[in-house]
Length: 416
Image 1: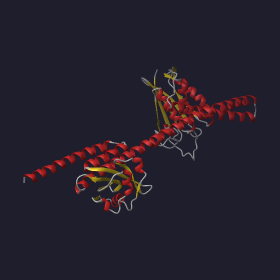
Image 2 (image 1 turned 90 degrees about the vertical axis):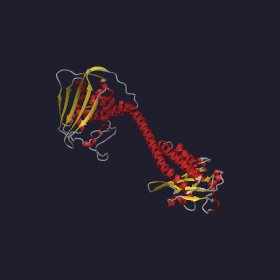
Image 3 (image 1 turned 45 degrees about the vertical axis):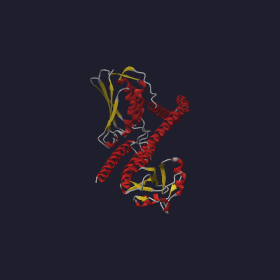
Image 4 (image 1 turned 120 degrees about the horizontal axis):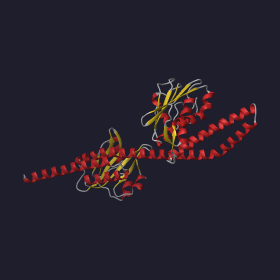
């Protein structure tokens, strides 16, 4: 009787130890996101828990429709990964296809024993137990224990390994998702660098030939008359538009690379807005717009890089001019506050859908489809404006009641 009691106590202690180990394994699996470390931990834990000589993880390759070794005790993982395990006529394939555990305590007599793997790992396999690794009803791989040290694999072993396998499947899936996400982020970063380099190189290379075009167009305009003068004026206007685009591309590239230096001076905000409007005045007059300035009598000074802040308002006024049908009304209001000044540019143009009020400040974003665009532009003006304003400790946002209801772009800057 005493012997029976001692055996029961021994079994209970072993169960408690196993349960504690399962909790420990679960915590580690849920906190490990490095795929290599995770796989190594899974096979080490499985071999220890089952008291067997080795363990292995095989994952399903959806493209090739076969199992591939992801990790195995005492073997070169890269070499082992080159050995495909067929779904038919293999023990692991049977476990995977049927989604059921399989215990084989006399492996030499089994017809589906895959000897190529045994030769690779240089392990004389006597017994094997495998369980499916599944997430809900989807089997993603197989976890195996090889060569039980004492006795045969039991139903208790199947239960223990099944618990580890189910948690391992989720952990591996999470690690793979993270790895894919990191790869996608790295690729996006690389593409962003390529885009920035392209913008920088293109804007630099276009400056020299554009300077020649502007110079010759100026000379032609001075010397020509009649129709020739009109044509020279068109060339000049187009070249100046191109120069403005190049300036935007350069500014965007410098902002992205963190190379945008400010030369700050105290200057009235009204002067900056008026200077910006003069550069867009011809476009406004061509479209027959009425532009109203609602400025306070007293100048409102701001600490700003005059040239760069002027570029902000050139872009904002240009947007209002372009997106307002001919004969529209544009109102530019300056409102002083205690420590800030707010500038509102209100138009009665095409408006902005509510879902795009924030997106329009993203680089290269266009509300219109690029194949059916009416208003032109590269979609970087507002992005540049926000970047420059942030460097001035300012902010910008858009408001609109919807399509054909006009839009208002508001800028807030600290007062000097």
